[in-house]
Length: 195
Image (cartoon, rainbow, N blue to C red):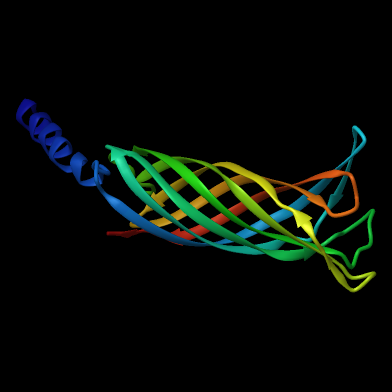
């Protein structure tokens, strides 16, 4: 019995490093996402007004370099397709964004789990380029782009990743003296390529 337990403990100890993400490792993760009912918020002289948008899709890619075991630092880009407003303002207006950011990714390994190899968290900070199109006047408004940030968590199994990410874009629209935020919750799926 003791020999069997010792053999099992030795097998687990030898297999565990297979899942470790070692310092110096690099990876590229292309992703497709589904944005669940984004929300645009307007700061009108201290009063906040919200307007829901139609759900939309996104495309993105991240590059990570592991500065220490299980801690990646990197850069990424995310393109959110335009989606129309659902209420309050003109329902023909649409909004989308392209975000460029730096990111951190702490990874936690799960040993002896049949369904998930790793769990990780995401933090992103960067610059968001917001697109706002006004169908009523058939023109694209010129925006003052701004800060972008996001937090999230993900799981990995056999290099397939699934993430839940909450993100915020800050921007202003020319000639309107109000500040806006665009808040999104997205489910992303992708594949990790180790370099």
